Image (tube, rainbow, N blue to C red; front, top):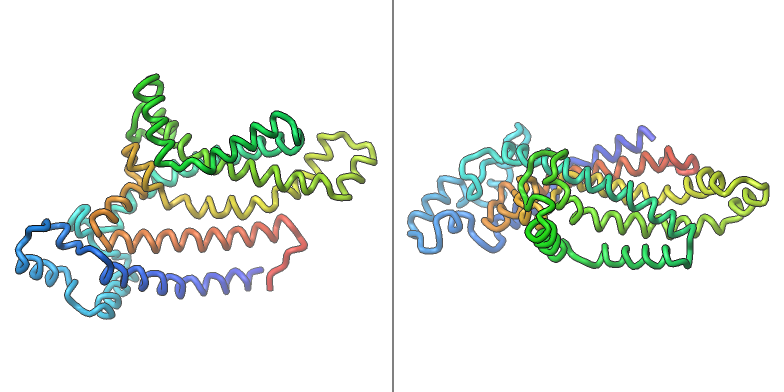
Length: 310
């Protein structure tokens, strides 16, 4: 297991180099000019050329990328060009990172605490009204996009009922987190509920579960000790991917509710063609998901002794 983990970690720098180069190349040759965005469409061409020279954007791609890697190895991810010109990218990311982590942690908790029990109830009460309602709710939770549910809930709960604040961020224990958490939590709740129901139904039909029931064990004991433990193992992958998404934020939801997280920063950077911020965010997300996948592999081996890695 240790050898497997070390090998995976050794591949991480290679992965980051590939991802960073592709992202960097898209920033140089992709549509839009950050300097033009900064100065406006009617800016003087000579001024645009001078600013590009000052920022080093007129140099060849390879030279720019090598210089970026050298600075990144020293912890310097560059400076913002348009979103907050002159401010270090790493500071801009640090401001929003903790906010997005807190919000996404609440969303994952909702998915686990609400979704898994719903899936268990739907599997145990298969082909009943509860099962049908849960299945319908799962379909709705997965089908409705956040750009549709966010404005509807905002209009209903903030402007009509005036039950919750319409936006902002006052910390994870404030009322302002409830509405965005509901919007973002619908998807994870639906995914956990659907997968738990499907896995548990499959496990309940296995021979060892029938044997446990034939021995006269109480149904709760059969469900908890024999069925549920094996049914939840496939959910480790989903949980791991959601952990990887802790640092990604949500472009649409954070922008609609005015949450100063990574998602809102990324949306502003994308709109303004601020490629230093976009490159840094891409690297951060790549590291997060790589480590999350590694954690999933380790937890799989701990949860199921039959799994071995060479």
